[in-house]
Amino acid sequence: MSLGLGEPDQPSRVGRAMVAIPIAWIIVVSVTEILTPSHIHLGPLLVAAPAVTPSFAGPRTVGLVATLAVIAQTVIGVLRDPHELLSANHEAQILALVVVGICLVLFCVVRERRAKEMEQVRYVSEAAQQVVLPPLPKRLGPLRTAVMYLAAEAEARIGGDLYAAARTTSGTRVIVGDVRGKGLTAVSDAALLLGAFRVAAHRQAPLEELVAYLDRSVRWDVVEPEGAGRFDETFITATILEIPDQDSRVQMISCGHPPPVVLSEGRPVTIRALRPAPPLGLGELTDPRYHVESFPFEPGDLLLLYTDGVTEARDPSGTFYPLTDRITGWTENGCDAFLGRFRRDLLNHVGGHLDDDAVMVALERTVAPQL
Image (cartoon, rainbow, N blue to C red; front, side, top):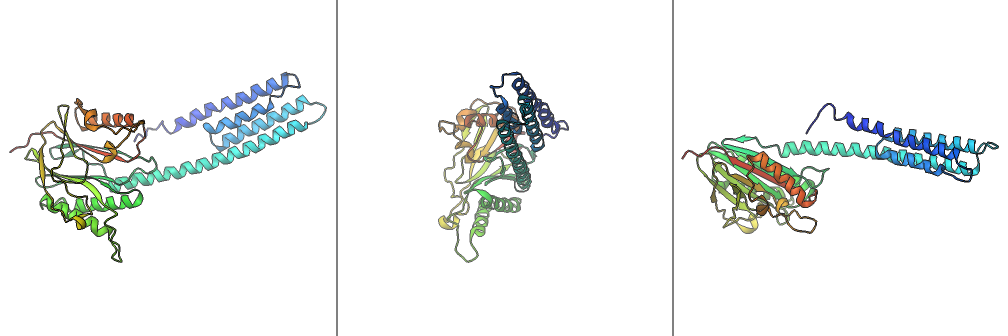
């Protein structure tokens, strides 16, 4: 986020410059009204001045412009009818300007209050995201990393999509997942799983034991105190990987999550699990036997982990984002460059707005394993 010193003042300078437009309009209408024959009435056009001001200014400026419009209408009435102070027609126009001005000022006050509330919501959501989903380190042993998180709702910048990584003595363990559901419940479930992963991933237990522990952690959390479990309502899809420092093959357990993609010299390969496990939290229903699978991950390759918000992103015609087709031939140098291009391509596909949160984690092995 850029916090340049000159940025906050720019909108206010533009707003002050734009005030000249309604003021000039008031002057033009007033002079024209005075110089035209008495049967031509241009005074009602003065309402346009305060009406356009809220588009670039706050309540004080709107009140000032509305006041100038009322004064101008009063002067026009006095000059056009020298034999009486104001005609009934001019009094009605002045009253209308007063009412419109008051309404516009109240509108601006409410709008500014709402904007402050939304800014507070954004601040809290960003703070929550930093706690629940802190950025991954740029380097994890021999790996370079980069993360893209696109929230469907600008006001709530965190949801049920999750990712984390942990170093062990022999490699790196990574998880990417997606909680069923939305809102604070999804955030809470994501935070619980990430906490369990960070506690257990550092241990030297086999990958299948780690996943079994994560499944139990989710099930323990979703059982209600009175004993009526809701495990059939809440679950988390996830892909859990172990990337050894000294071996070019990655170990993987897929729990109902979209498959990883390895991009090698512009050629994407989808790593589909032959024996996928059920989503985390459904172990009590299915009694899973976790099967560890493996695939090659060579120096210079990009390993892409993502949530279904990527592959289920639709364009205006309803077509899903074809991930492997779109990235075929991409040879960006490094994770950050790849995700920069990918973000632009995805947003261009959906027309700038996602219907669901989308996460992608890009990993690159920088050195060859020493076997």
